[in-house]
Image (cartoon, rainbow, N blue to C red; front, top):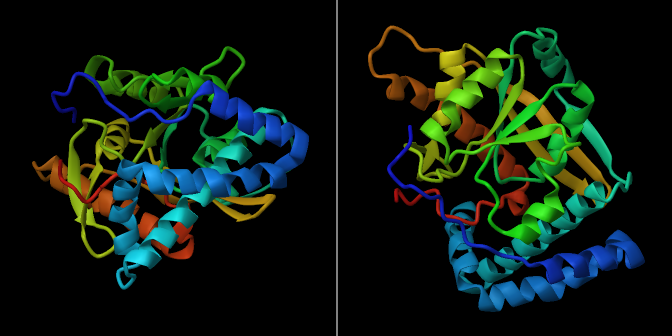
Length: 301
């Protein structure tokens, strides 16, 4: 499942001063005052961060195929502002502010899975909505969550997210470790824990081409391979910001990957990857400015 790249490279954005500035505005001026800063900051990224604009266009042009140059830039600007608001919301949650109404959709299905304490499941996330806030909902279910993610090499981001601290219910499994963290993930599942995997970014792992927004996109299949091998389900975790203080967290989409008698396991997994892509497509059609891919999933390399 893993390609030969020894190091997963990700462009760093943000610094301690920038994060401190937004936190300061959040404390002094509240959520609305902090949001006000975003319009200038987002304009800065629109003008000067060519890579962010280029990568955003990959999504924007497919989501809004009939828009011209100016409309595409306006849509990218709206996307940047939307992401900024959700980052500030994340800071608010981390700071201990209980100001958001989090509605959980699909709780009955999730509760049925949780009734089996000896069996874990894969939690499949994506760069849509505010998946970090969505994870906070899982605090109430009293299960350890192992988050498969690259060790954060931007100190400002690591400190602000406060992930993997001693008092946090989230632990990190590095995909840069032995066999891409597959062994650790399967051991965690066998112990009845939850393993959260990002399902829309390759980060050096193998991927399969499926249909997404009327074009071939490439999504990693590792989450489904691990689930099929561990005989456990995949719960798709989605969240959407409905208003300033309202989020909906959706866990109603559950996929059950299984290996059949066919020899080609990749082809069997492709159907599950396509199912995930269809779920994402339905989401971005409803919430077009809450899709924060910021990379070209349609590019094979």
